[in-house]
Image (cartoon, rainbow, N blue to C red; front, top):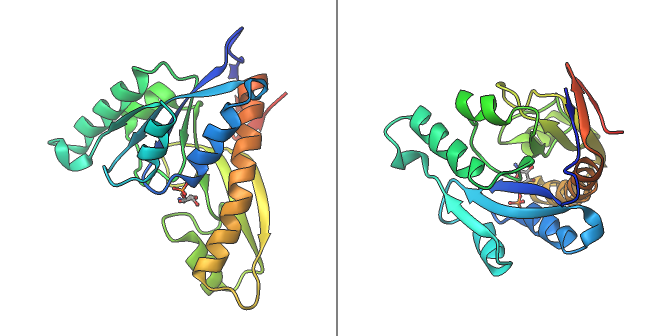
Length: 209
Ligand code: GRF
């Protein structure tokens, strides 16, 4: 399936977050350059405490929060999240530290244009505790993976990967921070290319022209 770049206007991004939003901050910064080709039209979170919400509102970007607990079922949450994202008419939806698996309604609407950044080299160490597991396993290289989200956990088609060395004296914090530096750069570079050039998804193969 081919996704063409938006003609004559910046690519509309909706960014989903749960945490401090350092990846979001990097995207907001990149979007201040018109040549980047994208604009963040809304930021959504699954919790009021997500620090990135303030970054967004300070930048004049619309925000919304959908807490799972506010809905009677997970499917009802999934539907509400889908509608809130869709209201902003995104070309591309980015999970930047969004700590929730979306459901079938969301994927039906956005699969193929919903990407996530993960802080290991997938398929090794998926899930919430990747850097800790990589460190405990003793790998010497880990990194960051940008991928299209599918129905599995961190299992979708891979867009880009950046390798990060594990140092002998690393603890989880130092390794996580080193990965985040590479992760942010990769996210900004790759989202810009997707925005400007579009992309093609063919099974697990992703091509950016
Ligand atoms: C990223 O490292 C992501 O891979 C992980 O959470 C982090 C989000 O950080 N799932 P931030 O909120 O963008 O600072």
